[in-house]
Length: 93
Image (tube, rainbow, N blue to C red; front, top):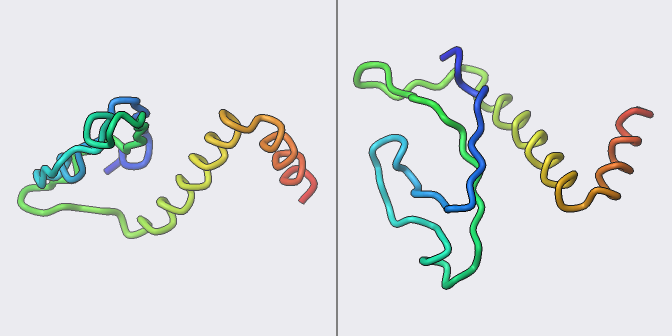
């Protein structure tokens, strides 16, 4: 549990939904999307404890926090001028 929400994987090869919990489905990648590039952002974890899948009690807060971090990171990567303006707003508040 101590590794939960600490490691993120960013890839340009797509993702196979459910594969981390043994529920493998069709992949979402360049091939299945008709040649459109696909980027994926995944949390790396092993949620199994015996026969149970475990999440921490504060999972909703963790998801909200990480979504803000990822959104800010993507803004900074793809829209540097907007990201700089947003950062200044945060510093003023």
